[in-house]
Image 1 (cartoon, protein in one colour):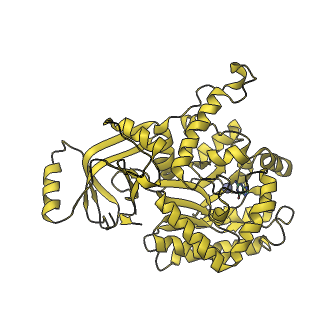
Image 2 (cartoon, helix red, strand yellow):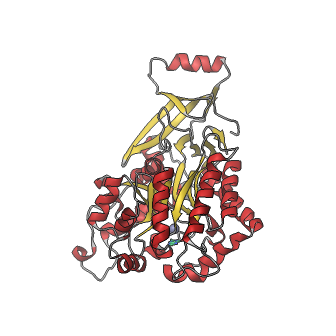
Image 3 (cartoon, protein in one colour):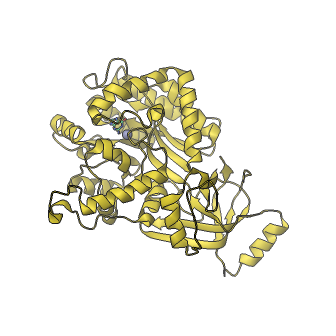
Length: 452
Ligand code: GUN
Ligand code: ZN
């Protein structure tokens, strides 16, 4: 299925989850995709106009019919990816965050001064993520302006919807000499240059790539830089991404330096807004949660990475029930998977462990956190619509006005992980997809109606 779906009428099975825990399935429906790649209409069976729309599309040669074993899902939204860390995926998981950064990660990221290396690594990553069904990614790049521009170019060339940030980190007390911005002013100038580059890019007429203001995390930035980035966020209207209260060490570093939590400090610097995405956030106080919700900011839930570096499980269900915006993050390479689907599975498992507790030597009452579990429906929501809501973008759902960013799951792919034993109930099919689909089940991926 390698042709563009722009201006076409699609006939098939569609599944999406606009709300946590609530899945909508429309079997054998018609979906109309406009010439700009957005959805213009959806006609379920029984809709009075469905027959006429299908007849006209057929006559005009604009009908695309999927198979009965095919299910069209919104593309996955990965809210937290360190693009330069892809060569390290599956490695370097043996030490805590503050050691990991200096021992493995900064030396790797410093290599992106070399544009040949950057090209090879970034093109592999973007192609792999698309194959895994990630139609939108929120990327941390590196401190390097040129390599960050290259990542923008590659996302546009390969067709991925992406938000790309030059990492800002200028604190000589926490960042090595060989890998940091030389000054706050230099980091701000380079961030502005990337914003201009993305917005003026000749291939970015549809705005498929957006710039992001990216203070790495408070420990790696001086107050001067945080203040400047806060002003830039307000003036430019750009998204903001950073790490927030990720581990015991990171959380207490900010308490010691600023006398307040990460969330409160980010808010004070003007970095907590509707388009801010805070990665991890495992140590939020009740006040922090209230501030994040009041600002309309979001958390990138990175359950796999949190198992290695986070020292705790993010209480996802409670956050969603409070009304917090939450999307899924692989946190490549803190999380050793490049798949949002695998990460969603981990989110379910982590929520079950949070609910039941982990230490068998404690009595149940002392180890449990009741009502913490999420199910596959909520994990699906967070991995798709939740990410779209977090980013304030019309993605992750099938509704008029939303981009047709989608993937086709072939539940009958012989090499895939899904095995159907006569199930027809779409809730069971989705459950099998979420738990057992592998890359071989992802038959096609589209961004803005175009195959990628
Ligand atoms: N905190 C600061 N930098 C990083 C990073 O690259 N990964 C993770 N997981 N946490 C961070
Ligand atoms: Zn991260």
